[in-house]
Length: 226
Image (tube, rainbow, N blue to C red; front, side, top):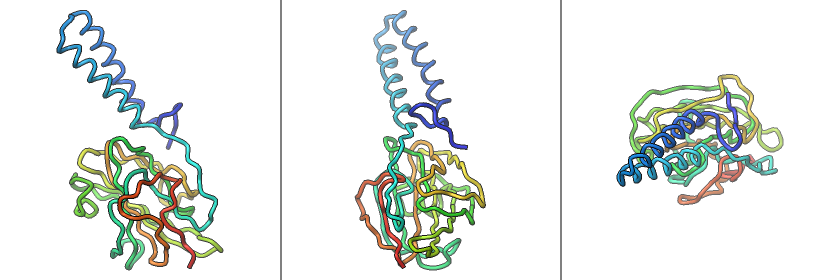
């Protein structure tokens, strides 16, 4: 279950608290020993601590009011937009939007539409760089199929793939099969760099292009007006 502690996702508290203790102890020891290399190491540890705090931040997002809007499931940069065959849940050709999250992006993922989770599949795999096309097929990933309603009650199905990258080694999912989702709701976190692929119906009107920066739950990546 997702929990938030002040500005942070609770999944990061173990890392943040543990590193804070290490930083304090190492700093005290380096000051006591007055060794230059130890002081440099102490400064590096504090930089790492602040990066961990930044990495596990969990900001609130302003959801767009347009009921036809499909929002980004992840923060990051669009690295690919193209039609792809998707046979696991959509059973046919779909539009795929790929988002790469580096270590400085927010890593909390959100539901692109409101609906019900009707497909959930975990695939253990490799840890290829998330930039590469093979990562979408071979890397450790969780696929989430959501059935919902678009504008005017039209049915819409989308698939979200949470993909572990070269550094990311753990996907934490806060939802289960048959759960009901609201648009923009927090659904997962992928730790330390990763990728999210969003598969949409061919009728969806894409609003982003390769190279664009997006924010989960806030940026409209497509609209659905069949």
